[in-house]
Image (cartoon, rainbow, N blue to C red; front, side):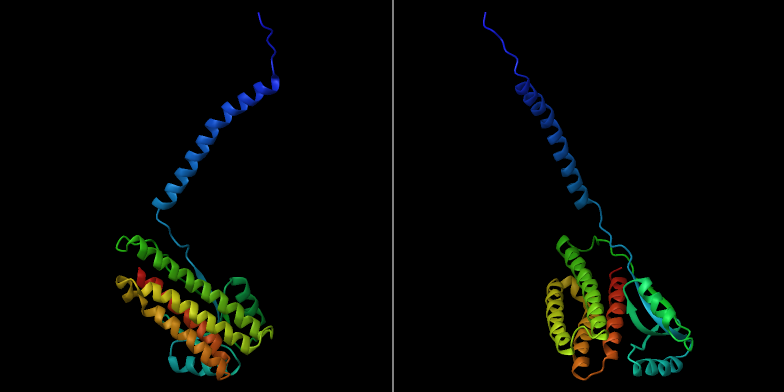
Length: 239
């Protein structure tokens, strides 16, 4: 009878191998389920909130227009937004805390407050194909990216961190990138009718470039708000 030697290390290797194989299969199965859920569950964009510093609001346009001109002479947007009242907006801010800080520092001569614009959620539409829904999502993301990037660049100009010539180059690149995404969006014939407010965003970007060349700095903030408003209208139109 042959001698039998028990190799503990070899035995442990076999046990580990036997135990890890089923676990690997289970993990793989879970990953596949998560991936499947990712494609089957309708995706929703979280409701976005955009914050503005409102200098005052009026029931008649003429009073709002008078204040708007005064704000613009001081470098603010002086944007008039109507929702039943005429709100005179000085600037857009990506966070509520930033807007609050500005409101607190404003002169008591103004009845400044934060004005919040809440956009609608976008849910994938059954009337759009998979490719069309992806094009809409890409356009929404491009709008948000453009808004945040433009805000950061305008802030750098106010702080003297970049020159107008550098900002001009930035705007040329921004317009080129936006137009490229918009062109892809319009390639879908069924989506062309939804490009009304996107065309206005494109116009505002070009107007911003013109404002640099004519030294009308208040228009940088004005056009930024205009882009945010048209983005909001675009989402409403989709719904």
